[in-house]
Image (cartoon, rainbow, N blue to C red; front, side, top):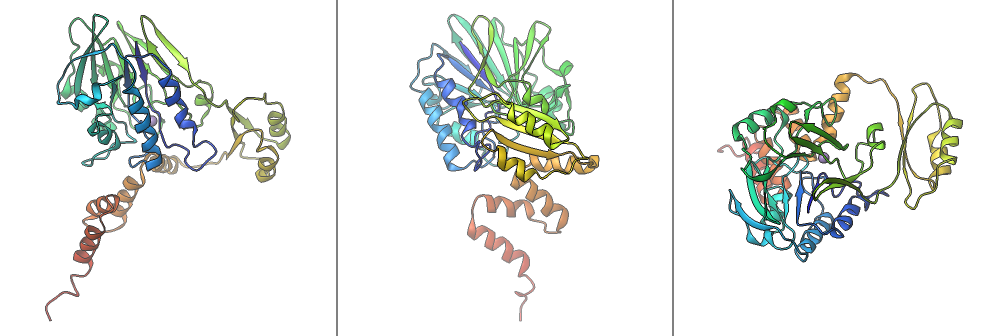
Length: 377
Ligand SMILES: [Mn+2]
C-alpha cells in the first residue's frame, strides 16, 4: 500500500491556538499500515524551522523506521543513504517553503540523517508485492523556470512499472493564488505516468489525464483560510488496488460573509458543538462599522475567530502583499536590501546572518563601511 500526501506545513500557526494542529497528520499516518510514503513538498512551513518543529518531524520520521514495509529497494539514480530505506521509506521532494537557493534546506538536512530520500530530477525504483513502483520527483523550482526544468529533465516512465511523478508547482488551471505566476499547463506534463502527485495547491483535487491521474492531495491543515479551503476536508490518499481519500483529524472550518452584527451573532450562536474548537472566518462587508473586539470577546469560546474587513485594494498592492506572505523573511529581506540600498553584498550579508556567523557579518560590514576610515594616514 502507498500513502500519497503533501504540504504538512509543520510549524504553521506557531504561538497561536492552532500551533499543534499541523502535527495531527503525523499521528494519523503512524497508525497506517503503509509500505511507502510519497510526499510532494512543503513538509515545513519555514525554510529554517524552529527546533521544536524539527524535533517533531524527526520523531515522526524515525518512528517510520520501526514500522514494517514490504517494499524492496531496486535502484535509484543518485547515491542514497541506505538508512533511509529502513522501515517505511519516506520519498520526498522539497517545496517552495523549503527551497533555499544554494543553501541546504531542511528536507536535505533530514536526508543527510537518513530519515528520508529527496528527489530532484531523479527517480527511485522499488518492488512491492511483485510489482515495480518507480517514483520520479522534481523539487520546487521558481515558476518561471518550471516548464524549462521539466522539459530538460524529460522524465520517462519505467516500462512494466507503476510510475508516479512528484511535483510542487502551479499547473494551469490549478494555481495556489490567482496572483502567482504559472508556467506549466496540463498539456506540458510528461505522458505515460500512472499518477502525477502535485503539492503546492492547498485544496484537494483529482483530474483524469489520459490513462493517468493528476492528484493534488492538498495541504493537511488549512493555511489560506479562504472560502475554497472551507469547503474541502483535509486528508491524504491511500493507493491499494484503488485510490482512496482518508480524512484526518481536523477542526471544522467555517467561512462566512456578513454585514451586520446580528447576522454574525446569529451565526455564532447556532454553530453545532464539536470536540475541537472550530475555525471561523468572518468576512465583513465594506459598509459595516462594527466593534469586532466585543464580538470576539463574547464568542471566543465558541471558536477561533478571524475577522477580515473587505477593503478596496489595488491589484498591485494585493500582489505585493501576497508575494510578501509567500516569501520567507530571508527572501523578503534580500529583496528589500537589493531594492532600497546600493549595498552590493546584500546576498552574502543575509546568508551570513541566517548562518548566525557573527564574525562573518562583522567582517563584511567592516570591509564595506569602514574603508574610508582605513585610508593610509
Ligand atoms: Mn504549500
